Length: 282
Length: 344
Image 1 (cartoon, rainbow over the protein chains, first blue to last red):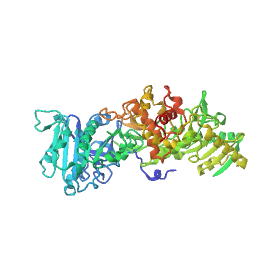
Image 2 (cartoon, each protein chain N blue to C red):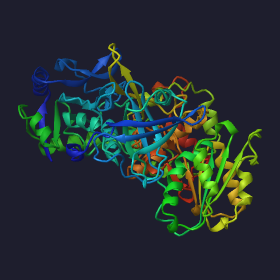
Image 3 (cartoon, rainbow over the protein chains, first blue to last red):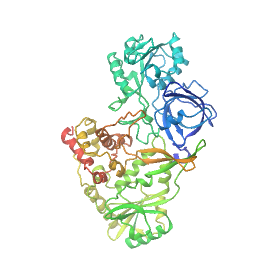
Image 4 (cartoon, rainbow over the protein chains, first blue to last red):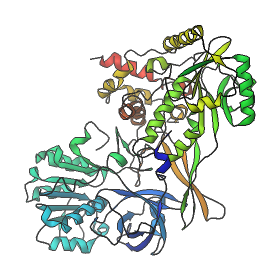
């Protein structure tokens, strides 16, 4: 009846991977690097924006977007916030432990080839930095392929910042513009204070002709999109990373549906103009 | 396509032999209602039923099933159901629903767990004899069915016609005492099907079903969603009895040894609280009205867009009977929208 069944693997079957490195980055965010056990290489090919289902036997699965760049070959990096059953279990892992991985999943990815030669603006809110970092580091590894690069990062409070040393390197580079702000003032913080949209007027490259990538908490999209509309950035130059509860990851279970789109198979990265009528997106 | 004729006593003999030899699920009385259940004898089979409590989707997507087994720290292993079975008495609208699920579970990523069961099944469909009180399959183009089944029976009085559509169907009926259907038999069968195309319409849509996606394009902010959802219990009964609802949840169960366990899939429902909730407690469809609207949009817009325009409501009417506050009737909702928004 169905020819694909004779050959295709079980779409729900995780492959074993080994945790290589764990590092708690702040109160809630854990850096995890893993390698695949049987694929012949530490990592696998993927496109920035794709995610994996991380599986802890006996607890369950959680969709986690890959944070490392595909140019990095020593394994796959993720940053996992301790917030649900699976992610709490992930925080208890140590190097050498086994996890299950399904993926890479997601057909809506960052348009890495399509935007070559163009100016890029990344707008990240809090943990929204994590998926964007995959494309950012890809761009930095292939710096000559892209135009001006601007990265905006807003974090709620000083103690929630992570990847600090990497952020310092971005700040020190003269071939990208990196600006950071925190929502609440702090004694140890001399930089910008305010939400991420307050950085938008400070962007030096021409915004209206840039490609803009947004990822952050649900509320952030609304205000960033309003600000970009004021700057007359056309919708076909705006990309939104809309992560939902991608339970099965393969377009069946229905949990991640955004109107007629599935975040898992149509996204998680969507071009704003492609979204059409999808009031649930923002 | 071969159409055969089998007398009712011969059919009963055939069913008795069949049940002695393999697993058969057939429609039987359950109190004053009907449902699919393991069939042991032809006398229990009720092909004159109006509608079953549960649609037959449960044989392909069970309420709970084991997808994988595992041992902590070890490999995950796929788990499949291998038992062959015969499904006896599937109504056309339910067959249309199964055909849709076939397409949806095949699309993009093929779901082997679903298709193993589908391959193991031989489906005997049967044209409706007694329409249920809420059926509107004719309005959704699902009063008769042309494909998907292995055999299609039609009650023509003292006998059944049997359309044998596949090799599986041929094999199933290999030992049955049949003759070729004559012209008169074929005409009677045709009459039953034509009658059903008119009679299975206890609720009448005020527009062609094909217009529904367009109608919904302008209905997103209509007050009907809030009005109906005001009395909704968010119990998910409409999801549970729906032959085309296929959303599911996945969870792990650990055995007593605390080492081995299984990953299970269970039915879920988009009407249930928390269905669209993500980590951090952000709920993308927190309001009942949003979930209520989502369900109706899935039936007549979102899923149809995935399956070539076919309505993902087949008009079985089960949700109407299952809904305690009586707000689930899709026809009533779509008609209200036609009244308010017109057909332009």
